[in-house]
Image (cartoon, rainbow, N blue to C red; front, side, top):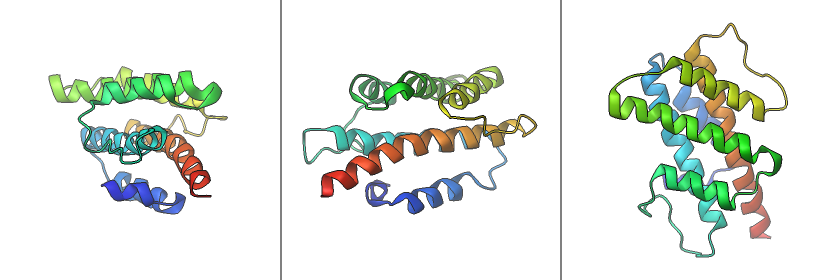
Length: 158
């Protein structure tokens, strides 16, 4: 999935929509959302790296460490605290599935609320079912990270 490095904003939007639409299983949605978020983080961290050959897709860094790198070196301004909180919650939700085979709906709602707090407005209809709220929140979170990555990538080209 390393080709995501070369995506423009429209390509990234298609990636999100193609991977989130028509998924009715919340566990699968969580797992895919976690993976796409990690792909996005990989691109962002590679862009921050001083190593021109950095490859966070194969670097052997776990998800928690990558979140820690963003916490220390990321450039998200006032959104940083909320973004890190949301990433940690998403990782905790995914770990619940991976290690205990359970979905903690209260934790998912906390995650959704955390993402909403990053956004300038509440873009998620409270009447939507949980899986739709989750996919919208995860899409927004990925777009925040990819948007910063894309902007820096384009500046570095010039």
